[in-house]
Length: 271
Image 1 (cartoon, one colour):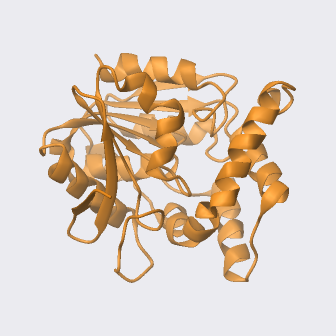
Image 2: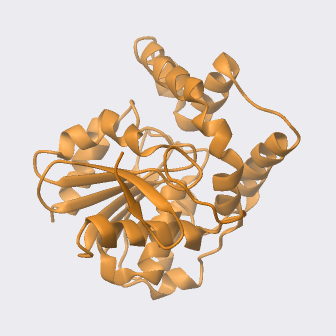
C-alpha cells in the first residue's frame, strides 16, 4: 500500500486520474476511499485526485501521543502535498473536520493552496456544535458505542435532510451506505482522536489572514455544522465566496446530492 512519510505520520494515500491536482480531505470517521464512491469517478477524467486517510483512521500510522490538534492534521496534509503532488499549489476539497484541516493549511501553508472548497465547516466549536461533539466523545470515553441500525438511524438523522430520509426510494440506498460504514467500525475507532480536535479548535483570528481563494459550501439543512457556521467562515476570510445550498445536509455529498455538488466543485476548481 502506498505511503508517504511525513514529519509526524506515515500517510496512506491513493491517486487516480491525470491533470491538475485535487486533494480530498475527509471528515471525522471518513477514510480516503470514501471519496471514490461519488467524487473521484466524476473528476478522474480531467484531474489527478489524491485521497488519503487522516491520522486516527485507516492505514495511516501516527505514533505521536494524543490529543492531536487541527495543526497536526494540517501538517500531515502539507507533508502529503509536498510528497506526492510535487509541492505545487493544489485544489483542496474537504468536508467537516476535513474543512477545518484545510482552513489550517490555508493559514500555515498558503503556498500549497491554489483554491480551497470547504463543505460543512465552521471557525470553531460553540453552542449546539460543541454540545453535540462533546456528548459523542464523552459517551465513548465512558465505554459507549453505537452499532448496527441504532448507529445508522442516529447518524443518518445528523447527515441527511428530512426530504432525503423520507424519500422511499432513496432511503434504502442511504441505509445500505450507512450500514457499510458502521460495519467497518471506522467511526468508532476514530471518533475520540479525530473529534477531539474538531471540538477544541478556534481559527477565528487566524482566518482573517488567509489570502488564498476560498469557497464555502453551506448546506442549509446541515444540523452538524449549521449553515451560519459556514457563513461565519466566509465572512472571516477576505474575499471568500459563500455558496448556500438549499435542501442539503451535512452528508449530502455522499449519496444524496453528490451530482449537484460535484458540478459546483468542478466549476470552482476549474476556474
